Image (cartoon, rainbow, N blue to C red):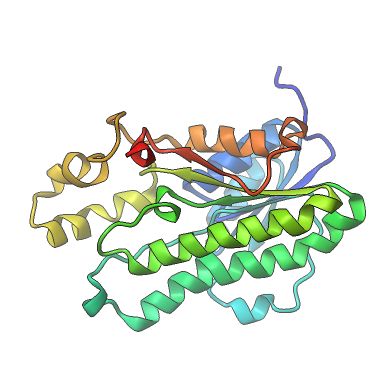
Length: 250
């Protein structure tokens, strides 16, 4: 039986209806947390919440103005929701750039701002930001994603500095390419931009910098997130944990 190390804790996982978010919501629930599955896909969020005996929060994180006055009561916040657009800078649609920053940087800031008062009041809290190897390294054709993730890294560090005296930690996890719908949707665009066949994208683009030649699995990321939410990680804050098969070793 899994030890209920997070029993009594309330966790909010954004983008919790699929991919890394779904795996994380399931893992935190296994450890005893009451998990709020936050996602814009109502049907999927309700389904995951039902599976883990949690709650669904149907929310569009691109509508950041709607989050301005949000109050959030939780012990754990996992900022995971993300989207991707791939194009050269000179062809990048301006509204796509803005959208990615709204979902992946503005919304996490507003959620952190909304949840910190309840964490401070209890003297305990965990903020985990699902960043990326692209929060630490750049790749061509991903100006919006890379810059948003770099910004998330900075937000996470500041949160850790401010939250430390109140028992709140903040960290990033930085996976390489993860086997998720978000990554699968990139294959055709990457093939077109690099002038190669879709079947060659994995080897020639996604895994070229990794020493371990496979995709990261969502449950592996969820395991690291769960550890960062534990009491054992109480002295870990302002850090960025890579899970990239050695990509950032170069």
